[in-house]
Length: 516
Image 1 (cartoon, rainbow, N blue to C red):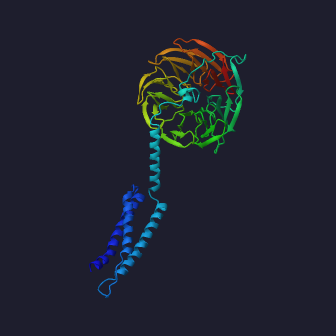
Image 2: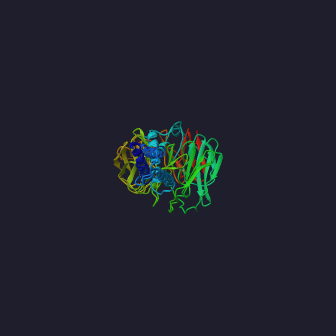
Image 3: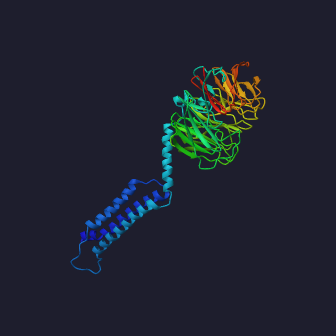
């Protein structure tokens, strides 16, 4: 009798085990799919085991039929059979329902998975590049962006020519016609010189041989939208290109951002938005080798964006509140690289890997056209248009005002520092020399022609180029001493490039290469 009694209780035990298994498994699935909670694998597996045990009991421990039929006793064989039938159907529906839910439910699953993927990628990225310690080696021996190495406007290496003549040909290695005009400066990597040009007919990238000036290739960059209306002062191709040694990057007034290999093949291309302003796009590009940084400061879409240099994917985007026409700089401060930008009111430092703001100091006025100057150690110099120049003492974590100039100046060209002297060419044609530690005026010289191209210092000589087509060379000393004044025969708007004893100068019509 005890055996029959135990067997008669078998379906009840099966239902209990089966119910517990279904509850455990379905509970885990519900939490995971609908509420983005992480699954407990042991709980889900335990639920399935309970379901399996319920089936096993139902099939293995079958009740015996009584020899004498008792109407008062339930037909346990029938109950057991019904359990197997109902349980099998319910379990099948559960499995099908789980599959359908997994592939079709509109819950937090995609968001959660994407979020987890982003977190994992960010973790790997931060682990791999906790802090940018330095730029690649090739960046120190090439002229990769606007104003050269780290944007400091200081040329290194061999001695550069201080005397040349276009009429006599002395000191002129080569001179070549530029197919389409543009105000961007040349960049140089090894034996290649890169420029862009643009007009109402289109926009192009040019590559020249640095040894002989031969045009190696030109690439037309087609735009999906109509070219904007721009002023004569801005043009269609103002931002200076940049390179990471493998690709070159160009940006046009249309908002077209493009990456090309050194043979002129487009690697990737995208449009970052066309600003509805006559100034077009002015801020130049800069790269740390891994990332391409684009300062996209235009009303309604002000932001600093880092693109993957190889793929063009956006790595991060940081909103900005003020507009600036100046270009960003990558400066090594206290052992790490900081990405520093200015606007009409502030100087802001960003972490290159993440776009997070390191520090900000509100100390500026006027209009941000000129880029920052740097003493190579820990002092920044800012000379906004129609504002007093400012010097900042900077560190890894912050900045403080070192001094503010005595009077406002109007400048488009960027300042440059050498030793204890800061040189600022102005729109009026005057160049002023200030003490880097105090901001006190040391000397002023009037060249009688405005400057737009930024000055470069090489071998203690300051090279400046005015808009009427003259080069003015003077010594980086506390007393003004002229070295040479040389006629270029055409206006010079773009900042020259200095590399390995050669000077590459872009005029309004020609590209010149000077060498001793």
